[in-house]
Amino acid sequence: MMKLYDSPSAPNPRRVNIFAAEKGLELESVVVDMRAGEHKTPAFFAKNPSGKIPVLELDDGTCIGETVAICRYLESVAPTPNLFGENPVETAIIEMHHRHIEHELFSPIGQAWVNGPIVGSMGIIESIPAAKERGDLLTQAYYKRLNKELSKRDYIAGDRFTIADITALCCIDFAAGMVYLKPADDLEALWQWHQRVSSRDSVKNTTPAMSLPS
Image (cartoon, rainbow, N blue to C red; front, side, top):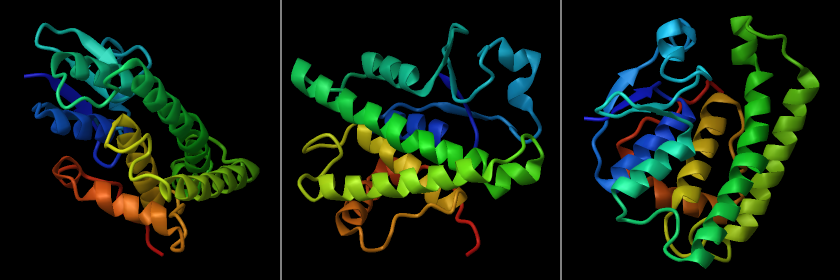
């Protein structure tokens, strides 16, 4: 069985877990204690020189890092249901929206997280309040954009569930649970989409980020 080096509540391993569940693939979860620095040990660097999770380890010992690379591998070994695109046009449209989500939503969420109170309390890096504020503003602006787009279609990249929806959901749940960046309640189309995708079995069987105290 393939092994997934995982961490509870982290958004990227959750993306892979949802993707694999959609494919009906079972992965053996190997929990990595990031607080203890297990992802920065020589043994882990041998699996992924970047020292990041997730990592997919195949039966022959081959290790694949990077979330999208892992998902593309899973798509190749289990083509159905298709999550990256069934023809050249759809593939390009899904890729476009997925890149938007990763760079224009996930990136500012990451900046807000790195410069927020939780990471700051760990003493790993010195927080930059202006970077946190910028991350917050860019994230909320993108939520409004998503709400507008989702008022015209049911899913991020069209009329069906794809990798773009998986990434967006994991970003938003992590931001709401761990970064104090929950979408505004009046973004009705966004919340309707959130309810729609959260009801999928592949999503319900994963662990989203825990909510912070209000």
